[in-house]
Image (cartoon, rainbow, N blue to C red; front, side):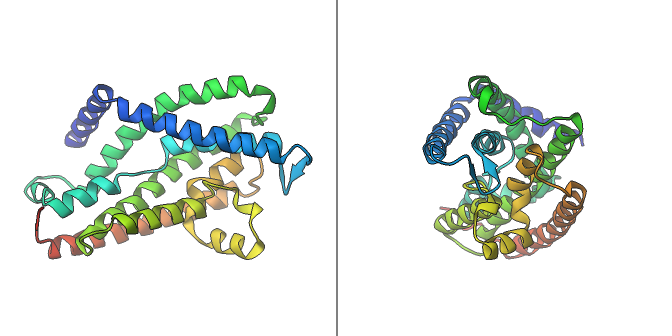
Length: 262
């Protein structure tokens, strides 16, 4: 574990030194959420509720979505794809380190750092919107929410890692990654709560694991998830299954790796 702790510490120091991109990313997410909040405020002028949501529920949903963007959703596939495509992945073939665990550590370090910064922004938004924020009524809900966020972070990393190692088989995957990531985030409920969609779409989204990355944690926070333990169990099964698939996929990818470079 010492080598992974070293990786964690070095990446944390890099994040502290080069914090500009993180701050710009947070600012971009904040602007996106602000536009959505303005839009929903206009929609609710003539309506007290939309589906199962009051205006306070929707405002809380998108404030939490801002936090999830920084603390859960992963974007390391871009770096992984670049390493494989440009040949720098070769360095890992002679190092005594597991590539999957290495990137999990990198992602964890980055998410914790970004989470600290974005939590400050989130607290400011909660302070400004306190009259329109739906807060949990008990501590148990907060514990369930924290556990759901942890499982969401692991799932998000696994799916993003899977997208990254597609570079073993596809030379140019940037456009494909955009399509996969946006589709994944859409099915996760990052753009709109899943239960505001038609019934058929809800059934499809419920059968897939993506909802555990965004929709499921927020539903717990809002007190709308009636079976959190069942959700924890299903998410855990997906995490274990994906881990096995990623180990197998990484092994097959290394076997066909050619280190073409630029």
